[in-house]
Length: 147
Image 1 (cartoon, rainbow, N blue to C red):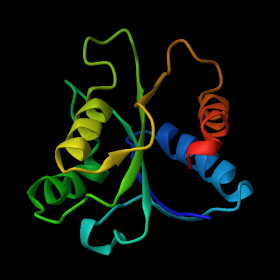
Image 2: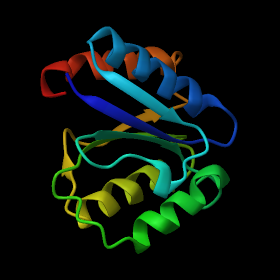
Image 3: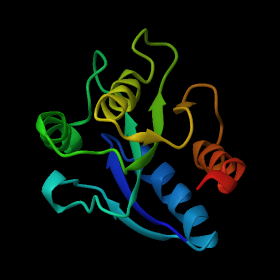
């Protein structure tokens, strides 16, 4: 089974719950996980890992404060991410024109670093989904054969 680093960007805590729901599914499927609520780029394993990046969007398409330094370090890194499979779960609100912009930016940043997307970005609309944790659970189960 695989080992996942779960990297969380959250302002109000909702994305933390979504990440924990995804973590539960991964562990039920036999994967190892390590979750980072205050991610520090240098401390997150990169070799023989898969990354699950869960982030909300803050303000005008910005990253939450707790993940800003991680994003800055990731963006400035010259590490070769060719062997790093990743997933992005983006959390947002469709009443804003910047719906899930932080997650979309992160997804594209990973692609630009040559990381390999396991699946397309998964977006969760907090205004139209009654149970975002269940949505994350169902998404992870739906792609279990790709993990």
